[in-house]
Image 1 (cartoon, rainbow, N blue to C red):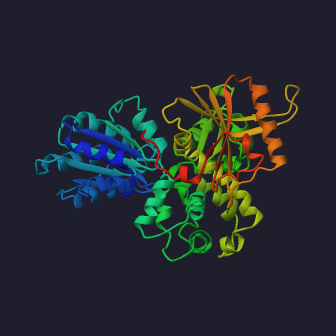
Image 2 (cartoon, helix red, strand yellow; image 1 turned 90 degrees about the vertical axis):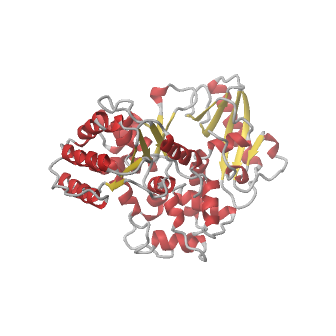
Image 3 (tube, rainbow, N blue to C red; image 1 turned 120 degrees about the vertical axis):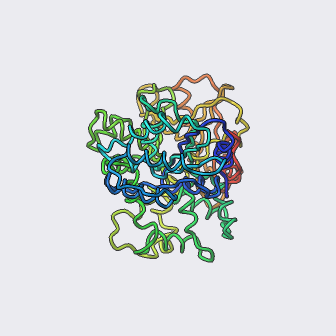
Length: 477
């Protein structure tokens, strides 16, 4: 198994706990939650069940009854509600033999909480009234709808308040882990292909496992994303439908953010997408953030209430740029377009997103892993204070009174700074210094895929972060 060391240790440790354990595992679809749980417990579950996507209450109950029967419970009646269902689970656990821990695993629990079903209340009664008093139960719940688990379990203000003994947010793989995964499957990817694959798939392990040995990366992308029956051809629609009850509203927000690469304020975004600025709009944004599709960030020198949202999910960006809206695509589009202006422009934006996912590695390369930092962006519209506009996509403000102004450049060859670009850099840094009135030292930092070409203009750069730094293992959390 690749990575997930800390998460595996937490799950395995639950087997030696002295009291009942309630562990919630959440993370976006395809990130490997179910695989992690099964591998950590070696597939040895006392009871296992999975919710049904878009299933009605009675369909969910019928499937739960079948899971009880598969686990060996006799005389399971037709279930009329969740109180009765959990009573039957009590009966199964109580009559179970053996002295070891009884691991109960319910996958995709959010799907079981259908409207007006009373599911959550029944689970609260089951856990508080019976299960939590036992010392032999490890209860693991899992779900791709991260927002449901956060709201209904972690932030529960009723019977489940503070009941979760373990909380695991499963994050996408890093570049380092993706390379390790590919090597474990006998697939060798050069640095350029590794970077491009990450810009398409992000760190979602399932997508990487679909790559076929013996094909070039471009052939794999065509086969998966552009072929009529490609395994990822319909993934985008299924992804959002599986996570959000009202996925259409989330998609409106995502599509609007895709048109504004530098981000938008909440007010700007909701207005542009035609989404109510009331409680629902705010909730949709929070759910997208919790699921890892967007990031909420503050511009340098701005207040938190002026925070902006930015689309950072690599696969979503790739789909909206190249796949969405194409009813009859060229099934060899990627091979035919690999060096087109459209693809090259996308690479520049996508590489910035890769860098956002690897801030810890960037800090490690700069030697500031142990320094308190804040990551910002900054944008200035020309005014009387400074007559030239400027945009900085990543600023790392450090507690040691240094600000790293990061320029992120994707290039097949070492990136070369020429005279014109040097002047633009000086203007950008001058704008930042004059407008913000910062008293910190400003270090221009280049994050590149192929390094920086040393010439008479490159002396302005204080520090470099290379692709080798990005694929290094991050420091421990």
